[in-house]
Image (tube, rainbow, N blue to C red):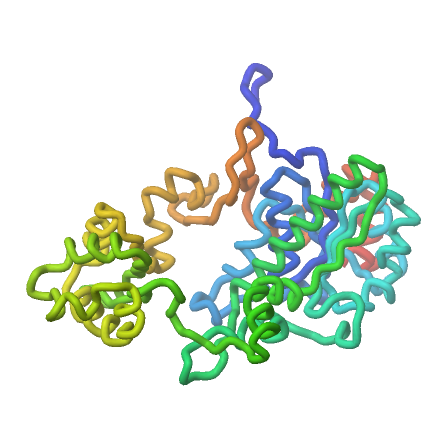
Length: 405
């Protein structure tokens, strides 16, 4: 860049450094969000056991590392053998020049490595450290292993999800990312406290606790009634109709929610006369519609199945009825609105491949993706020579001796 060229605006966390020991999705999503906010993030792996999401992941329908790409773009990658005491010492040197440490091992692993919060705050007294796990760093179940569906199960969310005549439904992808988002909020709060007091803090985030934070109303209902709420499928008290309905074409769906009598009358303006469903007084009041909601859903589905999805959404929104297409990932990638806002974007060098951008908009300090996903150990020289001051000879010796491995 020439000296006269304008520099890209820096994110709100520019100048902060994150040392990232996280794996899989929940922890890496936390550090991914911090990276998009402008922090420099150094991801630590080892060639002996890289992040499992670097591998092709057929569960999500594509034999590429999409699951790794989505939560690691813009990070710097180094290799360290934490089973070698010299590797642990190098990690501690990086801690000394970092602001935040993030880890998502099973509780007890970081302590065995000598990298737990008590050990690290002796090196960096104002360190903010976040630990992400299935059930937390304390309590009888703290050593339990877990992954996304278990998080929702352990927090009571899965039991509330599903249809009345079916089993609890696995709550999957959203649990990792909700946990990562909660961890990010905790880290930012701890950093704000550090700015005010100069004191660091350990943030303990349990994925099952995050799931339970979503069911406060169910817990209150159970406390008052003495019985747990039942699964309700797509029903929503206070709304009728309220469901996802089929539209014309293959796997085309629309979500429609009607709450008030005025919205119901607006919906009837869009419904063709031939589909007015008999005597209008049968659905005249909300209580009528709620009592006959299953019948109403059947009639609605017969009508919407004849409609073009996007045209129906436009017509319903035009009269003030809450309606939206149930989008596939292809629909999301093609959305003119999301592309215009930068929620869906292309990174330089990845023309034609869509990625998910930052979910925030800041004036003057934009949150943004700063680069693509790093190769394993791609930034080894930059970190160990540029940040820790090793020369080329000592760096090569550490590599040869599999300390950097």
